[in-house]
Length: 291
Ligand code: GUN
Image (tube, rainbow, N blue to C red; front, side):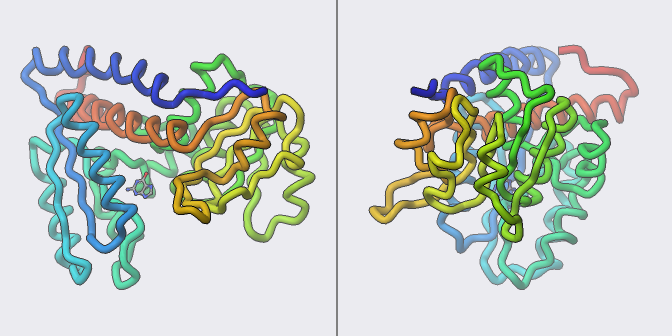
């Protein structure tokens, strides 16, 4: 039976460290600020944004929410970002995705000051992640790397299979694993023989968005299974991509949904907001902020 990786507990551990950093910053008169922009209309996005705000409140990070109508124009959204790029008490800017179809998501993300891009979605930050020269981490992949580290799971030389090739999870996840010397395979909708590829994996990370996509017969004995999916089952219950009840009997480690990757993503966003403060300080004053 697999060990269930407790994302809440690992998250708490990291948040203790974040609290210490925030205390040091406060002593210097610095309170990190995060602006969260949401274009209303997607109930899941509303829940994620509420959780991000709650995390800021509980840690003592200043936050501002910009709740925009579903009819907001590209120009209005761009103007808001330009304003926030200049706003001194705002260190991080996050635009909750997905955006409605009439908005040009690529252009919106490109308009965020890369030094304030706490999601690490800006083309400059993505390039940095690919090169392994980054200061702002993609939150979900970074959270997963922290989970693996906490459990002493070394990815070096391991066969890692990432299911899904999204810009938010799949692609940056593959990059972080590669920088830690894993052998990485990305599977997607056009991949042939996903089952065989998974069966050979030491670590499977699923970010597909389909209930029970990863079944026990796809998992090698004692593999590590990380579930990024947030889905609803037939009864409306929150669940991941993995058939948890059966896969847990084959895997050595497994993350639950809820209580696995989710809490880590938000905690890494808080960490990135502090990292953004440090980065901006260095850019302005030319020296490291020592906290
Ligand atoms: N939508 C789903 N996940 C994320 C995320 O990590 N950041 C943003 N901005 N939008 C998302």
